Structure formats: C-alpha cells, structure tokens
Image (cartoon, rainbow, N blue to C red; front, top):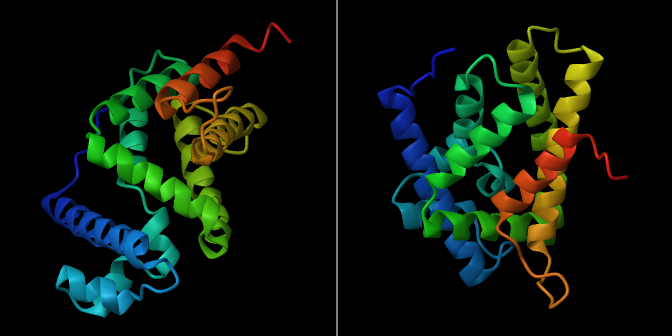
Length: 202
C-alpha cells in the first residue's frame, strides 16, 4: 500500500493548526487554562477568533489535536503488507516519533499534563479516543483483510489503544526514585512487545 502524501492545502492547514496550538499551550502555561480565552489566542497568532474555531471547534480541541496521530496512521498504512499488525504499528510508532524535535516532545508532555489536570479536557479526551479507536480499527481491518467488526480486529485494536492510553497516564505522573519517567516511545514499544509475546510469563 503506497503512503498517501498530504496536499499543499493540507500542509498549510496543519501548519496553521500547529501555530494556533503552540500559542494556546504557551498561553495556558503562562496565564492558566481557564483564564485564557480563544480571543486571546487568536490575537496572539494574528488571526480572527472565527479562524481558531474553524480549526478547533472547542477550546479542549486545542489541547487534544495531535498532528502526530495523522502521521502515525499514514506510517501504519504504508508498512509492508507481510508485517503483522503489532509489528507494523511498532515500526510506524518508531518512524513517527523519530522525526519529533525536542521542542515537539516537550509539547507532547505539556499536552499530556493538561489532559490529566483539566477536567474539561479530560472529558473531551474520551470523545477523541472513541473517534481515534474507530479509525484505527478500520486501518487494522484493511491490513488484515477482515471486517472492522471482526472480534480479532476489535481485540488487537483495543489492546493497542489501551496501551497508548495507559502510557499517556504514566507519562503525566511525577517521577519518583522507584518509578522514574521513561521515554514514552520506549515504554509503549516495550508494552507492545509484551502484547506481541502473549504475556507468556503471566
């Protein structure tokens, strides 16, 4: 399966959304989430408030949107057909995160902290997960040449999404001597490897 390349318009849209999001996250850190309005964010970016709402219908969307999600799915769909589902996802994850700069990794951590700390954002996150799970399940079904409601497809998709969720929660906890922070990609890949092995040691 060939990798779909984003059009020029898509690239422009993604670039603008990244600028709006980066500005929003900076203002949330400086002024507080509740104290920062969409109008403040729009003014800082130099666009109309309606432009922000066109790209982010709600304020929580400014935290939850992740351009890396799109890239991850593209990398996953582009993996060789002979690879198993979990292997293909692990390779796609490595490929996607390898391109992130230190600033982008810090942005991901900031997003994670807001998701866990702000009830409004945490609640909206559940809706985003539902949509993401459906889209990923469809991609798994396509790769495995099965239907999206196949029990095996649902099971493996749900297990992978569950690992991503738990890893995100772990990344938001304060590190301790007995439980230091690990690189999120390393932690996710380790959990996926255990899933792939079938938890034979349990």
